[in-house]
Every structure is written in C-alpha cells, then in structure tokens.
Length: 169
Length: 169
DNA sequence: AATTACGTACAGTTTAAACTGTACAAAGTA
DNA sequence: TACTTTGTACAGTTTAAACTGTACGTAATT
Image (cartoon, rainbow over all chains, first blue to last red):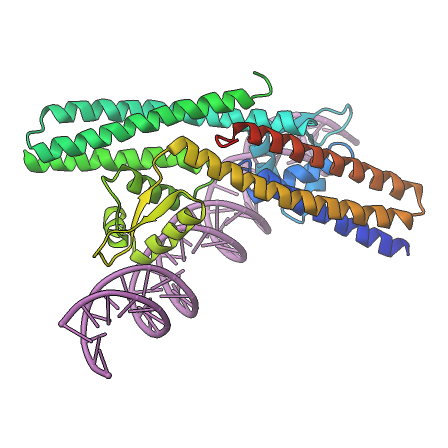
C-alpha cells in the first residue's frame, strides 16, 4: 500500500506541475521554464540543480539555463546555506506580486523600446515626404503616418493600463 | 527618383510592420500572425489572401491559416464587397479595445479552465490523504495542499486584475 | 599541490513549430 | 453541364527552439 500511495501522490504532484505551468505560460514563460518554476514552488525548501534534474527528468544543463532565465526575470532567488557546496534556489513566495511585477517590467521595457523605434521611423518618414512629388505617394505616406500615430498612442494606453496593475505602484 | 522614393517608402513600410509586430507579440500572437495583422492594419482598405501573400512574401496557405487564427481571436474581420469573388479581410480599427478585449478573454478562459483542474486535483488529494499512514506523507500532502490553495487564490487575484483592465467592463 | 565537485559554454542532436505545394471541395461563371 | 476560381486540408519539408553530453574553468576539500 505504501508503494501505491507513493505512486499516486507522485502523480498528483506531476499533475499540479503541468496544470499550473499553463497559467504561468500566460505570463510569457516557456513551457520548460514554467515547469521548472512550479517544481521549485511546490517543493518544501530550496533545491539544487541535481534535484531539479531528477524531479523533471531533464539534464542538469537544462536546469542551469532554465534557472538563469528565471533569475533574470526575478522569479527565483539563490539561497545560501552554510557549509553546503551546491547552489540552492527557491521560487519567490508571493506569486501575484512576483509575476505581476516581472510581467509589467517586461512590458514597460519592451514598450519603451518600441516607442523609440516608432518615433525614429516616423522622423524618417517625415523626411522622405519632403521629396515626394506624386499625389498618390503623399496620400500613402499620410496614411502610414496616421497609423504610426495610432500605434504610438496605443503604446501609451497600454503603458498606463499596466502601470495601474503594478502591485508596487 | 520615383523609383528610389518608392523603394525607401517600401522599406519604411516594412520597418513599421516588423517593429510594431514585436508589440503585438507581447499579447501572445506568434511572430507570423503579428506581421499579418500589422500588414492588414496599415493597409489602406481590406485585403485579399493573394494580396497578403504578395505583401509578406509567404504562401497563400500560410495566409489562410494565419487569418483564421486572427479571426478566432477577434482581431480581424471579414468584409463583403458586392460583385467581388475573393474574401476580403480588414484589421479591427481600435487597437486598444481590440487587443485588450481579446487578451483578457483569452486569460479568463484559460484561468477558468485551470481553476477547475486545480479544484479537481485538490479533491483527489483529499481522498488520497485518507489512506495515508506515515507522518512524513501527511506532511508532504499538507504542504502540497497549501500550495494548491495559493495557486487558486493567485488565479482569483489575476482574474480580478484583468477584469479591472477590461475596456468593456 | 593534487584531487574532487560543481556550474556552465559549446557543439551537436532531437523535437516541435512554421511554412509550402499539391490536391480537392465548394461556389461561381460560361 | 463543363469549366474556372477560390479557400483550405493534408502530407512533407524547412527552420527554429529545446535539450543533451562532453569538456573545461573555478572553487572547495584533502
């Protein structure tokens, strides 16, 4: 009976990992990174790369790159244990704050970058228009210009909306 | 000069498509779908599959599947023109409303599904616990149970937050 | 100082996604 | 009715991402 208990519990464990991973994928995590995070999250205490490797049945190399991705996104942190040689990692505790912050930050960064690119393109377009002669061309250019304006204000609305969501605002 | 004008304008056009696509990818669109949407969006008037194929340099089949994906997400609509045989499609006008609605809806759907799955797993776990004897097992099970609870309240918080963002709320 | 343990860079492989061409069903045209 | 045209299903191919194993640098242990 003990063996069976163990097996079904393991199965439940695995189910939780795969199910909740889907939610985290909505935040832009790759399936692999999501599973890694959930594994850490439901584990009792921090884990070593070898333990993760064992738990997920993937190579240690995969764990190493996966952990780095999670660290970069601020979803996981390294933990020190005196007299212990291996690196230990644990998932950040507060899911909502962690994921919302990370997600919003990712968005702000991307939005800023896009905004700059669009502004630059818009300037290019303005210069180009100077040398346009045909009426048809002018019309096309103006239409594109208008669209770029729309994209830019879209960025602004998004930035505002996500700022509103920020748990740290 | 006309040729050069035309070329640089085309380049600007392409740049806009690739740049703004990145923003839309943040909403979960694949790079290909995003480019398709932007192509439609900046085009003056609706387009046929053949025109999209020409504009993006991809096969008509790709356009067909891409358009379907965009239709499913409510980002694009079919347009009728009397006496015209080919299907015409145009991008929805209001970017913010369109993308926020689509995004939020996607989230609500996924969240509901996950919530149900987690609830079911939780029930399984409760049954399993009945038959557990060892103390160690009980402890593990309780820990997992607690985590599932945390995941579920996470879902709730997310649902509330996204509801707040909904332009149609 | 020599040895062992650990994490990661890198090259190569496997796996999944995107894309294409052909073929066909449905609907329009002659 | 026969003939086009149009959109999409499907199988096969290309391309990109995920993953692995080996090899090596760094740091701890003896």
